[in-house]
Length: 119
Image (cartoon, rainbow, N blue to C red; front, side, top):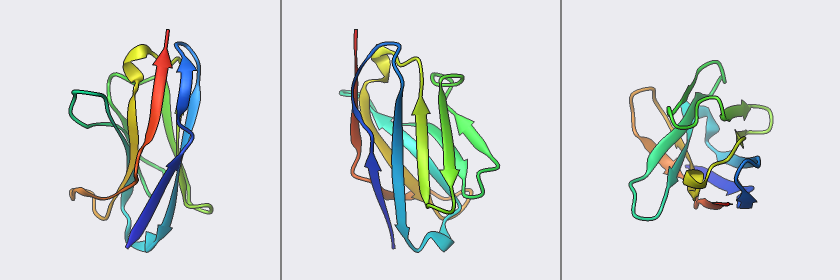
């Protein structure tokens, strides 16, 4: 099994930056990639950013391109999401997730961390 624990959420103002971190433990050898998702009230969960375990390939939702950066530290088994120029619409619960294959579903999830952006 794989365990994921997010940290770093909080209340910030529009335009501020915030860094989320996901600590990954357990059978990390089975993992293909990691993702950060978010879910705002009344909305479906959406993927924000993804990275493969080597860190060589990243993908971003159009809404966060140029503002968010996902990174992975294989030595520390952490996956970070640097969020800059935060907007009100970035307010959501952010989840870290892991998948075991390129085409498979994300099968391991963290408990989520709240990010609230105020005006």
